[in-house]
Image 1 (spheres, rainbow, N blue to C red):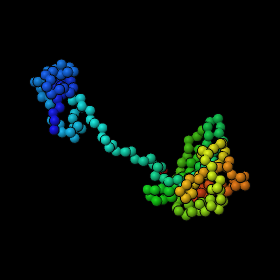
Image 2 (image 1 turned 90 degrees about the horizontal axis):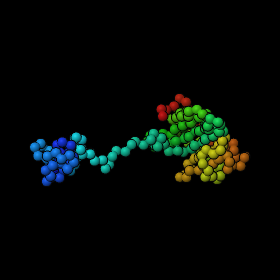
Image 3 (image 1 turned 135 degrees about the vertical axis):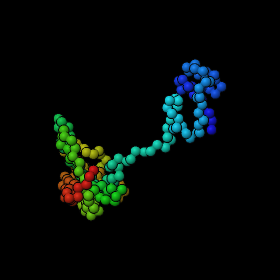
Image 4 (image 1 turned 120 degrees about the horizontal axis):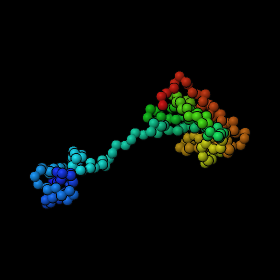
Length: 201
């Protein structure tokens, strides 16, 4: 415990041996102005006394963003050709919800110059197994590239978790005969959407 002295007129802290406030000159004596405070009781001091409440050294953290709990498994995106009003895209993504253990298919669609539409549907591991079987069957993983996503207007990009590695493939880096195989991954994923299982985002 220790004594903290405050001026009864302006609320400033003053030395314990001072007879007058060093800020406003008011006499120290004549009005009760000492508070006996324990080191852990700062928060109980009224703001009128001029003492700031110290910050919590361990403040509560904000909850994680809604989609941060979703682990990306497969993502297929087609970028719409750029126009005077902006770009657009058509994207379908398979996630694993690490909170619930459920598989979810999310769709994102945006016409150039319009707001994005986002929908989500409950899925299952069978869908993931089907998509991965398709990826292995086409042998497209060997065409991995490091380019950004999406690429130029009209391009198609697919990325997927292959083992513990995220692979990214685009039409730009595939032989022409493989183009349909890449786009078939997104088509397969889209065909697995059950509209009866739409979930709230």
